[in-house]
Image (cartoon, rainbow, N blue to C red):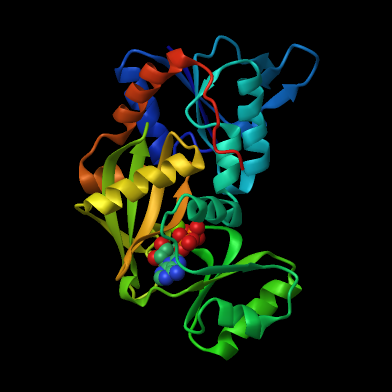
Length: 300
Ligand SMILES: Nc1ncnc2c1ncn2[C@@H]1O[C@H](COP(=O)(O)OP(=O)(O)O)[C@@H](O)[C@H]1O
Ligand SMILES: [Mg+2]
């Protein structure tokens, strides 16, 4: 097959691993920086150009779109979709999970546990928001954050108000969430491919941070999921309409709570679990690319 990996980091571990496994399995594989692609939009002829040449005869696209480039990156993915090219995750689904409010609305509707959450933007009803979220200590996050940046733990009402005020004057959407104290500093990352759980790890912060993101100095270790956690991860992937994703959840004393679903999960989980995630993804592409168009059934 002719496989195209859309990634800005050709030397990035996950991209390297995908390329390596695609080659091992006998495919022609190419890594293209989608930020440098340009698109000709004309009637009946949706072309993507890269370094002056059209990208043609592609059998499958594997999008690895960075948060910061969501809009442009997904428009490149969409241009391939317009050509009828198979993509592991659709442009709609990638966009959907990049917006935490949209994602939480859908998760809640699907009956998946999430921490109690209040969304706001241009409000100065801080006291009211704090009350609706259950009072301090509270987690406050920017609606489009990633890697743990933009996630704050406010231990008092005063601190919570100050943080909200800062977001308010900067005009950013934020969410206020109950702090799940019993999970502080740990979360679980589950890789779901084609509706199946293929790897899971627990991430633990090493420096007493409440955030367990590996980008914040967290460390991963293998974990055995409960049946409920496994089902929750699969349901979350389905609710987002993602075929390939990383579901993040925390263990609370009332069961697993989903924090977010990542459309381009990193592959460092391979080192922690010993699971060959890249090979599993390529195998999934081989099986599902034949079906060509993936239908999005989420409806929001
Ligand atoms: N409500 C919460 N209660 C306890 N810990 C949380 C909560 N929300 C986030 N965290 C911690 O902060 C980390 C980052 O939060 P997350 O919502 O995943 O944002 P990001 O998209 O920046 O990774 C999580 O992995 C978790 O360890
Ligand atoms: Mg996270």
